[in-house]
Image (cartoon, rainbow, N blue to C red; front, side, top):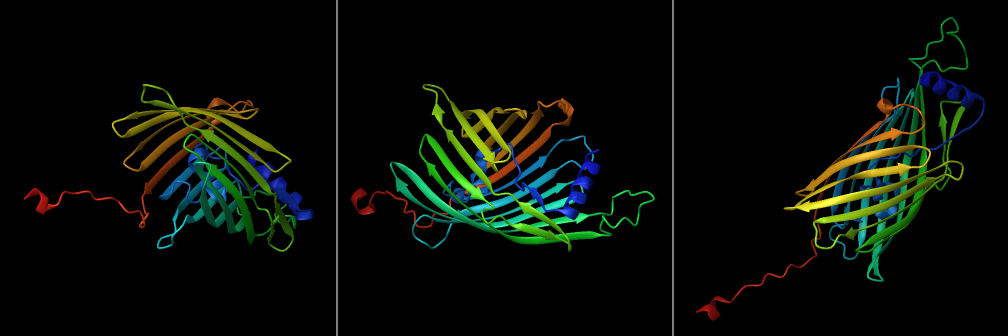
Length: 313
């Protein structure tokens, strides 16, 4: 059924421009500020590389599958809070494949006891449609369907701001601000909707315990449709290891359960999104996150205190 719905959308696109939202929702959005907001490049103030995978609506034929690779870090050999990021997203949904390759730049400075950063993003959007699996029966010569693969690409731009404090953060961003249009083949166009994102979160330590609570919120909208994620996450710190878990509620969409571990600069997490719209508990979405970070601040001067040998003598 889903395959034929996608085919119908393509037929509509043959005669008119299709307006589409390109952006993927990931369970571990609070660890992926640099994906949703260009100002998030350098938010960790370390080199931060991660991979995120989402298998959505599992159990359905041609279900969406998304893979993201991202790395960002302070710019080496440059003084000041300058940061660069590079990311690549591959999104397969039915007969369509969407790709987004982007570069983020962010500059930050101290403000009110925290850090305020502004960032910009430039990138390339690519969409491809492969008709080899279309079953037309006796209508194999229908001109409404392409005889093979078709693809197109276009330039993309985004921007955002992000404020971080010891106990909270908040940011807003806009992606696809230039309203890009992708021409697929010779006749079909896909308009990419401008997309805006608001995110905020906090860190609340519980006194006299090894437990802290990190509530967070993310709202995604193109002013036609919207999605809000309200997350309650708890962290337990034990011998240098941080165990975390919690749940996210998205009104009228889903409830997501997740668990994870941080140790030795490595973060690993898993989440399962259970849809509340009647799709079924077994047809939810699986999300996996794996990240690694390391300090690259070459200008940081560590104080190496030692006693003089002469004094000891």
